[in-house]
Length: 66
Ligand code: SF4
Image (cartoon, rainbow, N blue to C red; front, side, top):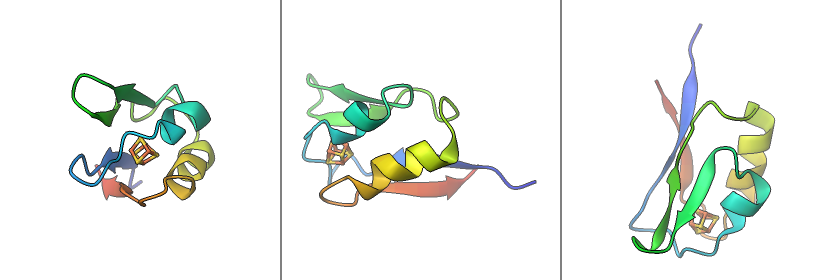
C-alpha cells in the first residue's frame, strides 16, 4: 500500500507556527532555522496532517510518496 509523508518547502515557509499548533506531533517550528520541520512524519493520522496543510498560509506543506 502506498504511504505518503508530509514535507515542508523550507524556502516558502514563513515560520508562522500554524502547522505546529494544529499538529505538534508531526510539525515543529525551528526558530533557529527560521522555518518549520517535519519531526515525525507518521506521528498523526493523515486527516490531522491534512488539516495542518490546509491551514498553512503559504501552502508550502505537500504530500510526498514514501
Ligand atoms: S504553517 Fe506553513 S508557513 Fe506556517 S510554519 Fe508551518 S509550514 Fe511554515
